[in-house]
Length: 364
Image (tube, rainbow, N blue to C red; front, top):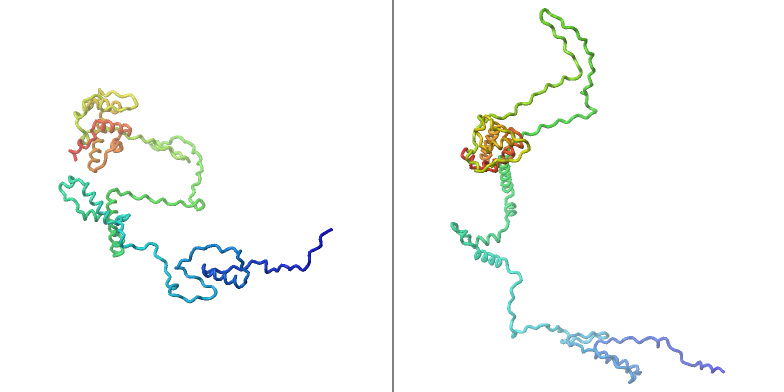
């Protein structure tokens, strides 16, 4: 048998009893405990078995209590609330020593640099001159540009001054270089469609029939010249004589022959080709034996060698007068022989020291 059902008169659960009670506002430990006692005494349901509230830290005397329901009367103690000083100043404690700044002032740094320089400089460099003063060194270290200051003070005067400097520099630069003639402007050619002066190919005229020479009186008359569409061939121009052997017409600025070093083949240079024999040349007596070997290796006769030699030293004197360095190019331009042979002459003379300024300086 099943057990009988329970009686229906049991009290139903109220929905309000299932909700948690509201939390009480605790302003402080004192107010919380008193409010809790009041609520417990009013309800009359507080039992001795209820757990006590957790302990909280004590309230600081400098904190102001928060009032919720009724504003408490203001007290002089609650109005004058100030936080204590974290690190109070103790006049009796010894003060810490002053620390130097991390970056020294500029004046002290300049003084240190000047002192080190004055101690390290040598007195021998000021033998005839007074050494600079300390103020001069400090002025250099504290120098500041005053360009913008002077420019803003008088802009027109600054512009006139700079323009005068530019014009003076331009005049000085123009004196160092030779004036060059301007190039002639090239006339632009008209387009192909606008050309009207086209040259048409001339038609070949018929060849005239030759006739026998007719005698006019006693003088035979020449036949008429033949006309042809093709131009006559140009006459062959004979190349001018490039021999340069008139050394007597040139001034002699060459060093003496006894100034050559006392060693054989001092003027020897490398040259491709078979040397020529100058022992039977008419001017062989005017040359040093080493010069005969040099001229023979370069395949130059004695007169051409002497002329080229005088031309080289004449140009050497001109370069000394103008303050220009004498190079191979100058020797090549001075001589009227092959440029490679002129370069070999320059090399041979340079090797024995003949191109030194001391040899041509007496002729300046």
